[in-house]
Image 1 (cartoon, helix red, strand yellow):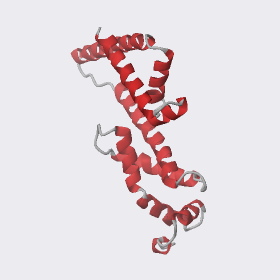
Image 2: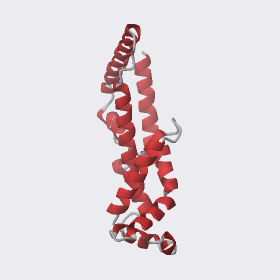
Image 3: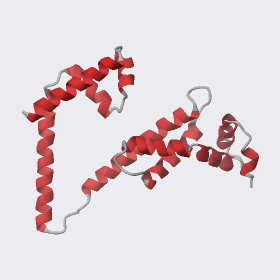
Image 4: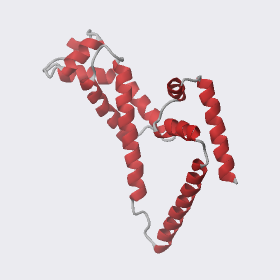
Length: 189
């Protein structure tokens, strides 16, 4: 067994190479990289939750597993390991959070008939809200719907959207604010 202390003086590039090597030094090198990037794993889980829930250990474990996959797939010369790993972990944690949310909505929570009817009423209310929202969205221009799609469905930042469409970040912020205000007006009418 390789002593992790023998790897501590190595550069990150050497640790990544050792972790990808498949030799007995791979596991200790990967462990050191994981310890070094534990804060990044926690940050990804926090970013996905947007501060709405406390740090979830299951999602943190998903982030750690994704980090291991990122180290194995990492190719030096492009983005830094942290940047590459963040993207891989964010996607994995986001997908898991979405899967958990879908599974939670499918749970048979109602024990009594009254509770079942209450859940059905709630479901009908959500469906009605969805239909109203779709109608409001269909009233938007193609450019406005495209902006919302990029920001919410594709999880792009306002800065990334601005760069892609060739306008300033401030312009995207203002357009986003205007679209959201128009939606609020349409939904309150």
